[in-house]
Amino acid sequence: MNSINLFLDFMRTHAAITGVASYLPEYIMKNEELEEMVDTTSDWIMERSGIRERRILKDKDKATAFMAAEAAKKLLKKKNINPLEVELVIVCTATPEYQFPATANVVCHMIGATNAWSFDLLGACSGFVYALTVASKFIETGTHKKVLVIGSDKMSSIVDWTDRRTCILFGDGAGAVLLEPDSEGYGIVDSRMYSDGSGQPHLYQVAGGSLNPASEETVKNRQHHITMNGQAVFKLAVVKMADVAEEMMMRNGLTAENVAYLVPHQANKRIIEVTAERMHIGMDKVMLNIERYGNTTTGTIPICLDEWETKLKKGDNIIITTFGAGFTWGGIYAKWAYDTPEKNDPDSKNTVNEKVTVA
Ligand code: UT7
Image (cartoon, rainbow, N blue to C red; front, side, top):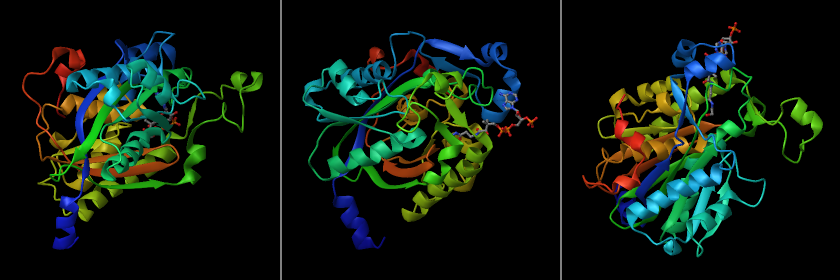
């Protein structure tokens, strides 16, 4: 970008994240519990994925909408915002409450955001980054002033607990962010999204859609669970996550020194390490919590932002990257828009957030 374009970009209205919150179920499933269920070891899981434990939503009558609503309610309380002020709610999820209506419609009702319109966005593990990009356009064009973007997934509802190749990876959780307009140059500066549908056979849920509706046979053949060719996904994820992170840095004149944090989707610690290496940043600048939560799909990135909120400073350059089923991938460059006051409302955080460890 030349200096005039840089100036014009600085002057435009940006969509800024002005608040974050998350919800994680209480139940902790440790690797040792999985050792009892499938032929695996805790050490294998830790070594190959970086995961030690994950959260599981045990309540049979609670699912994706509940977790999304809990995260959103915490966020609104923390920001002291009346739910009636919210204009749009986007829920990204791969495990919707129902086939229809949209989980976002249900969530609006649960949180009392009855003036908002709402829809779901399906981008699998890239859902949150896709949704943040879509939501930012409603703010940048000036049509909306308060938009909630929520990533929520009850992955335990589609995990095949007899498949050792996949059941070790996933966990349940949700995270929410508030987007508001900013005219001082803070917020989402740049984003680049990709998709390649040829990746579909490598990571998908075979049945339950219009091609293979639910039947006795699909249930018997365990086709309502996650089907994944882990190696094929890994091979591309490792390249594309790093590519897009590097692209974000180059397009915006960023160096390893002036990037404050990488906020990566948490699918496998090894994929994240390669991305950090390509960016020439140390792991001290990487938001990493996969060890405690596994892959919560659309929840990973907002949960990280919530856990690192108190460490983030106004003006910090952050790079968000993701890769997931589809294949889908993408990156966002944002200038963090606020400092978090030392004293937070104790109700506004998960207790687990006190345990943040920087890798
Ligand atoms: O967020 C969406 C995107 N998802 C991802 O990015 C996931 C990408 N994939 C991965 O993270 C990795 O491929 C996995 C963690 C899923 C698997 O790690 P891997 O190093 O690629 O293992 P592998 O599939 O190559 O399997 C190596 C061996 C195999 O045994 P043989 O054929 O060499 O005898 C597997 O059968 O490990 C075996 N194996 C296991 N052993 C113990 C597979 N799963 C397990 C297990 N415990 N849970």
